[in-house]
Image (tube, rainbow, N blue to C red; front, top):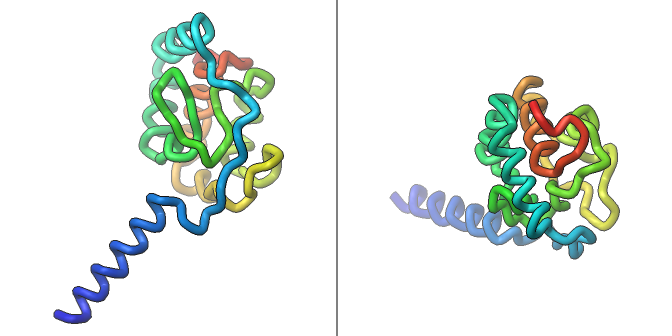
Length: 147
């Protein structure tokens, strides 16, 4: 019984550390302001009208906990450990796929390279990763924002 209680205390401590981000460092202030006004309305409209692939991507984004670290104003994601993902107008879907499956290959300056997990290709599969990338395009208005 004592061992079970000790294990529960350890598990609770790990959960608290993970939730608080202790030991994960801190993120720099995002250089990009969140979209407001017409840009925010357009982003919400693109996500809503994005089709099945974009909706699947939004579901995967939420399911994988991406919103804990990344912000997207149109969906209410308010993460602060990673860069905003609704200001990616210069990236293509293929760029985002690469950034998801190999997040440390092209780091945004000022962010710690070890924060984003590197196993999304194994956990999600190619179709789900591509759906997340399509969702990001819809949210940001970047190339190939439909789907």
